[in-house]
Length: 156
Image (cartoon, rainbow, N blue to C red; front, side, top):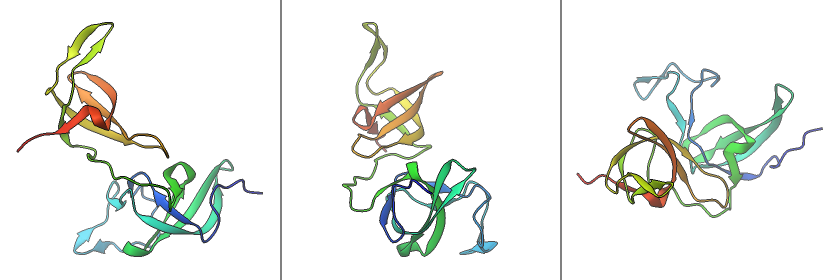
């Protein structure tokens, strides 16, 4: 028996970008004149879909087959990639690969080690239901996990 959080027919929202890992079945070789390849974005976070099937992977991971009506794609999603479709949603400001700036100075043990305005690169976006969005960023030779409010867009 499956211990699943979402039911078949339930409305869900994707909280992480889903990219082709080579397991996207039934895709055409060419979409809109572009060849599909591993790493290509399939569904962007924030999209709402409906659960079509609930199954297991490797006997311990619940996988949901979710149909995203607006983009007419059905993909497999892990439970930790989904929230209730009616839950409050605010899209994140930055994506993987964005170059942004620190919106404040950072200190450790009372010593400032990074200054407001220092450039950082976004390496990952993390969000959980009812929690603020966090970003894994590269600052010089360090990786830091920072809340969205600690970052600002780079002026053009």
